[in-house]
Image 1 (cartoon, rainbow, N blue to C red):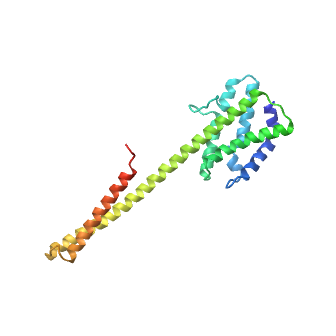
Image 2: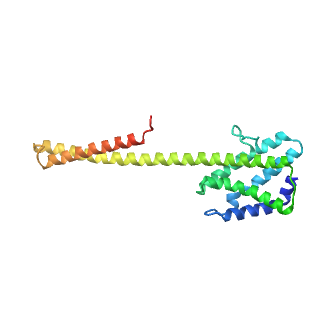
Image 3: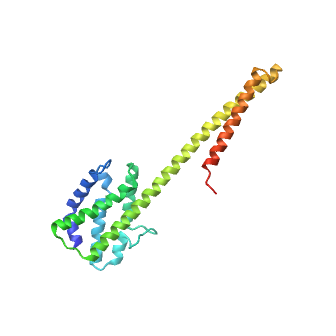
Length: 224
């Protein structure tokens, strides 16, 4: 039975997965990173297989979700897979690392089963594939959601910084123009002199800033 095989070889399977992870570029295997990954997934898979062996199908679905996903209400496995996806994002990894982590589990199980000549029932393989499918889907979904949130947050920060720079430049040009007008009034001077030239440059700078900002708005606007 697969769940007995997994119980007896749990440490060996975790070790093999860590080795596979460590061999990939920019990916180090640590207990913290794998806390919601391989060990927890194996435990949930074992419990799911045991529940199904005892004809407790509802308990198996509660643990690992139904075939086709559990997006409306995450299963126990789905919640931990989502946490694993969040952790990989925080560590700066790409979405393919999420898929690879669970793919390592499947490969480790099949390789070790072949080496030990351990026969599994077709139904057990179906359960394994279902658990892997749900875990990958939930981990990738959470990873993508958190990544999109990070991108949107950074875009807001960038937009705020650009707005602050624009306001600063507009204020400088407007302030210079106001001072030039006051100087012209106090000195009863014409706009054809040096002070008038300062006023003209300030107004020109204001116009350029406004035009440039409008162009940026148009270029970033979604196409209709």
